[in-house]
Image (tube, helix red, strand yellow):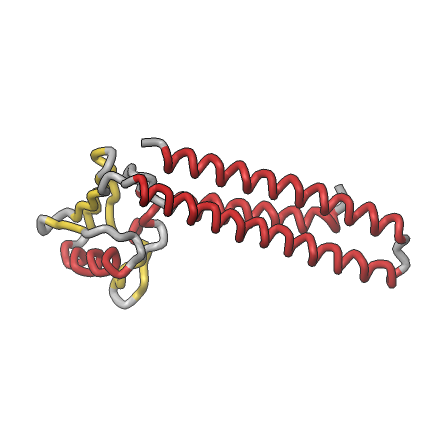
Length: 183
């Protein structure tokens, strides 16, 4: 494949990877420690990822345990969880914070599926924007003594990549929706 097309494929791969990591933060009724990936705690004046200041375990299917390495962090971790969009209430015993995941209702599952589809649609728009940028860049090549046939070929390659990544986004959305709807 042409190196001029490869850089756009790289961007499309990153879009898909970003979507997959966003999907990991959507909870599907089971405890998944990845939903805490974006949380940071004020650790000696520095926002620090939760994983770097505590031990995170999943002792049961619907519970996450967070054991901070310093007990002074318990209140800060609780504040961070409450301030986040997780919708979970932490409980602690002075040493360990527990997050209990309620069983998802049918209505909540459908809402989560809608959210998944929205994120998937946004990823497809991003892929199409990459295609547009590529096509604009290729059109500029005509002015630099590149034949129109070669530019058409480059545009065809980018279109094939776009189709491939749009399909992969759809598959990822379907997988996540099935996971959410599975009781």
